[in-house]
Length: 485
Length: 97
Image 1 (cartoon, each protein chain N blue to C red):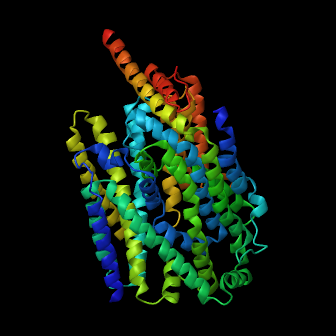
Image 2 (cartoon, helix red, strand yellow):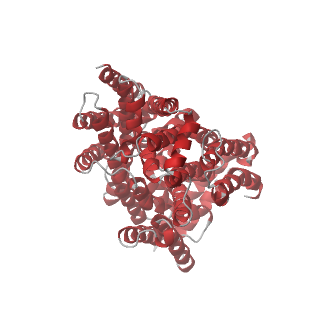
Image 3 (cartoon, chains in turn green, blue):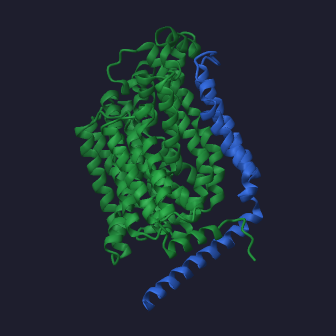
């Protein structure tokens, strides 16, 4: 009973935060709904970033996958997220600067403007929407695991309906501002839950952390490091392509656009790796499960099984609430990005005369439709948790080649970038379905490599149009250390 | 670009080498440190060291100097004007055709 009260209090608190975030929001303005008019300082940019990066995949998926696959998964996950911030230090300020020139509200705006191509804009939007589908499904699947296992008095269907409505209401109230503010609550709860479960696991095992790993070494020694041979290549190749793709996810890119200036984006990267200090607790949780409940039938239950085994019952409401708010937030941001891509970069291109007001309404309609869609897929396919992230990255990271080369190579053009993206996505689809992971390297790595090769070769052959060249020059002129004569 | 090289080395190259380059060296269970297998211990200390690297990179990055930031506002406006002028120019050229 106490559990469900805590759960409800958390949801109500998030709603109050969402309402409070409305201050300064302009509901009829597209730029405000999508990027808060680029008004956020370091604090909110930080929270809107971590808010969507660390999802239920972190709380449930990561320990579940480490439990199932050992260090192969743990090293990959920690490695790629950490290095993504290093890439972001240099990439994001440049993306932001280009966004200022292109008046970008989405990732597709940036690429479409740089290469002077509406078709490319639509391609990027379609890839974004298509590969964000597994992302949102993953959130619902996580909720299914959460509510089926914790049993706090609300069943999965009830939880999903409440969550979807809340996610929609956030966006309706204040666009991206609501998720940014709610994220503060969400991250406190998520980190607290992760640390509490980790500590509880360490306390419950003889010999603490040392004891846990000693037990694992005698029973599952192979799970303590990445196995030599193929797993090494797979881990490294996955880290490389996902660190490139990290800030190409429409949701992480959206956080970049909310920033007031580019210095904030650089400074925030100092704190991003420190925020990852919650990972030792997830690793403890995962290996506690390996040591004590190795026969758990569904590996995705690892975190929750450890929580149920080690924590008092009323704490389950707290974990369910923190988990639900995490899922809701990521759903809200994902659906908002899909709404923006569809409305601005597809309908806005097909029907250029559509009024801004109509487009903003459309953002909300698509947000709602996408949430319903996610809800339905989750009810029919509730069990796919692992590897979904990699599928999403396989597609979403393909914009990296065009974005990166576009910053410093004059010759890149709409044909080369468009062909590169399509080739990358096609390569990924073919490899995953027919010849997964050639030579032991991740299919996504091959796809991104193919993308780069196609983009570079076609850039050498085909000439960019005049406006594309001018826009490249404009971007070079924007360099902050350029001497103005 | 040239003046940013120290920041690139410290903020980019060092963490990349530590995580990707040295992978074969640190990918092992033993020795256990603070109870953790060595591979995890290595990743965890690099969370802190990477943060320090980025702190130093922020300090020495010429792009973060106050006068460069002020200058950056001007270059950005100049670039916007340049892009807009180019757009009208090319649109006009098309009309003439």
